[in-house]
Image (spheres, rainbow, N blue to C red):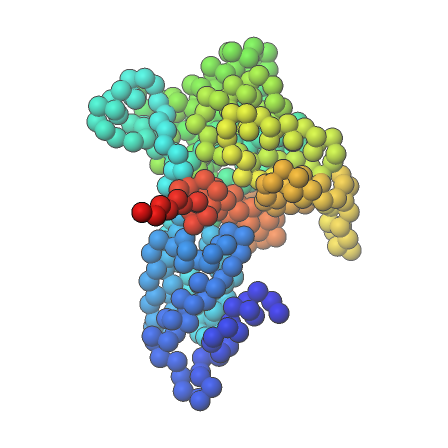
Amino acid sequence: MTMFGKIFSKKTPKTDVKSNGEALNSSEIEQFIKDTLSHYISDNFPQGVLAVCQELSITQNKKITINLIMPFVCQGELDLLAQTLSENLACTVRIKIALAIKPVRQFSLGNDKNKADQDKAGQEGTVQGKVANIIAIASGKGGVGKSTTTVNLAYALMCEGARVGILDADIYGPSIPSMLGLKNEKPSSSDGKLMTPLDAKGLSAMSIGFLVDEADATVWRGPMASSAFNQLLNETDWPELDYLLIDMPPGTGDIQLTLAQKVPVAAAVIVTTPQDIALIDAVKGIAMFDKVKVPVLGIVENMSYHLCENCGHQSHIFGEAGGEHMAHDHETKLLGQLPLDIAIRQDADFGESDIIENSAGEIANHYRKIARNISAQLFLQCDIASPLTATITTRI
């Protein structure tokens, strides 16, 4: 029996009528929907949808609309649930998600004067904008598609309804400007102090590649690179963002460790390929974040397989199930597996995004699913409001 079969076989019939032939009234339909939301179980909803839902309302006209306020992105997953509800209630059911994403840790961005002004005013965030959660996208080695994955995950989060920014911390090899189609673009400033991030199809983006020639950045020493990155983060006029994704430099050396310590990162995601050599270095990435006490949400296995365009056969060119075994061994999650697809490479080279152009396509669905997993796991693993957060009770 399928997961949905288990849900709908518990208490309610699979049609819009009862066994005695009478139609369900509005209160019974509402209860049916609430039971369904409660019993729907997945990795991102381990205790059902209502366990994390902040507000629920149901309107019934010719169509049924379920309005939910959620703490993480989940539109794509609940769209599938809405389809199943539509079939079982024999009418169109829509689930509309409003996001209320909060920081899982408190921090402040900006220079000392800005921070002092905020402390005086008793405000949280920054005077130049607020970033709710910073997520580092890292890899133990180069060549695993980390930057491409970061860009596509940023677009995927945006397609799921989140406000997203991207910061290129790969000081020595900034590739984000090209991937966003913003090569040779320069940021502006409205006050002469803070830089305005560039807009990339709705993403707020900042990179050292917008400021200096690529050849100049590659010859910087570690302290100089760290200082430049600190300025990019703190002297950018970030708008209100739910997530700021940071494309970290590959490796686990001094600069990576310094950046991980200086940046108020909420959590990290490790990108790897199934290849043994890549996995060895990815383990070092997990160890680095453990050292600076940044939780690792999970692993994204890139170039997991190649799908033949002619026959559909999956070829595991770089090995098979390496990311899955690594996640199991290090007690973290496999957030998703991405194919080796020429369209992904072409989009990165040309500064385009199939996720924006075809948000319901196969490639977009891969990234959107991983984006939902990252958003949900950040809440479930790190937020005190998570239903999985341990509680302490005392008896008198």
